[in-house]
Image (cartoon, rainbow, N blue to C red; front, side, top):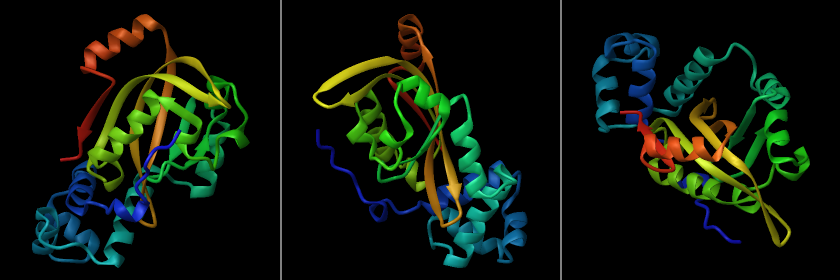
Amino acid sequence: MTVEIAPPDALPIHWPSVIKHYRLSAGLNQSELADQLAVTQTMVSRWEAGGANPSRRIQDMLFDYYWSTSATISRDVWYERLRRNPVSLAVVEASGLIRAVSRGFLRHIQTERNAIETHHLPDIFSGDLVKLYETLVASGFFEGRVSSAESVTELVIENGHEQAVHSFCHGIHRPVFMPGPEVLWLIAGAPVSATVFRDVRRRIGGPVLVKRAL
């Protein structure tokens, strides 16, 4: 199975969305954000309007602020805690590379860590989950244009020449703004019955509901 994957540098961060999303989530007006970044309110306004992009220094500051507001631990510790989590969690890069998965996720799909981490998602899964990844890429998820998404998918994992359907999964998807700057995909999922699968699809109007940052 071959899926065309856009390289990370083909998915530039959309700074108007990122800046406004951070400002509103932090409860700041433009003047207060300007004070935090040591720039003028006019400059913040230009960034949010798309008239200019922040400098690399400001980009790094914004993603550091994102990280500090959502986590009080280092990235290495965050990854280690995620891997030990009994809930189904996974972190995926813009390239589709699966960077980390939790114990709960491994139990959910009945596989070993080395069989999934550092592999690309389309090489491990097929069907709904690959389509979800493609939808998130197209929606600007990895550019910071999306605040969250909800999905219900049929998990199908590749196993040589065979495909094994493991379960239906209800997922919540959020961007993780990592210092770098880098936007990652955090998946939190839970197995559901076929009835719940159908009910959620009716409620959200399809396999995925994407909520824009702006």
